[in-house]
Length: 356
Ligand SMILES: C[S@@+](CC[C@H](N)C(=O)[O-])C[C@H]1O[C@@H](n2cnc3c(N)ncnc32)[C@H](O)[C@@H]1O
Image (cartoon, rainbow, N blue to C red; front, side, top):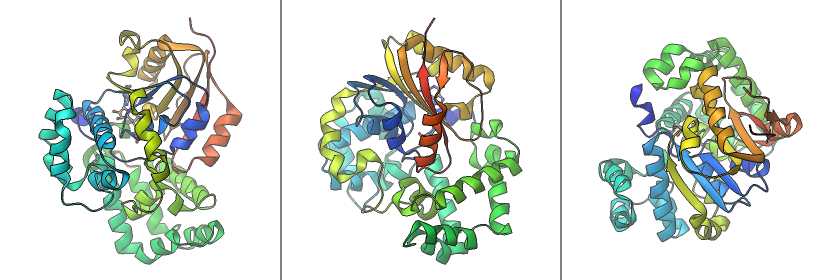
């Protein structure tokens, strides 16, 4: 488990970037967690003059640096093929054509992970591999039902398929497995398992999130839902904001606004980042108890400008905001939670009022 923050854990997208774009509209310097790189690349579609992507895990930053180099040089179709979203048998040759533009540490990382490059980095993360397994099981045991779900003509039809085919006791038992401590410790090998509620509560929450999502938007219009049910994206189907073909030129033009920084939220005061007025925080609280959570917010407060906005995702670990200055906007948070199409998160968005 110690190597979790060294390995590639996230490589595609499991968040709906439109939520953060709405929550942080108007911010001029946005700091976000790198993760798969999707969040910072999506944030290039904001009003920000600078987007700072920070991660404790050098592998996640190496992934974002590789994506940036590839976007600079490849057409949209070639980029999808390089990522592994569309077929290709020339990914290693493409990497060789990009590698001279990479910083030495990034080049070192990818030179020793050529197998991943060959299969495409989009599905290489721990979570993407788990979602692939999940989709294989679903195909095996509920193949027709998944087909019906993903091709339902309307949201009402989709909700009916969900109710009829995905709420029985077998599915419930499988969902409960997801909440078991030993699964996270020994199978998923993810430190977030330490901070989960009891299995029945995890299952209740996931069941209610999926039922709500099934009644709210078409799963095939959500890239994350497509990943959950199909294990892979359709190159002509739902894509994260930055990967949509009509956005690709703007993405390329915006790349100079992106800065990638190695480090943790707790040490933000030491990274010479200047003042930040927007924070896209993902679900960093999934990996912390209350004490480290507060230390992360202390780091955020140390660089926050007056009235800075924030957007946090909450998966299962419901921690209270630790300082009075950080004020959640209940209406905005509820609205964003309702419209976010990545199924499993509650959104907590608001403002940082005053910094000591
Ligand atoms: C919070 S995780 C959640 C995953 C996210 N849903 C995604 O798709 O990327 C996102 C990233 O935050 C990083 N991270 C977690 N806690 C952090 C911290 N305190 N400081 C900096 N990075 C952190 C992890 O290494 C991971 O790459």
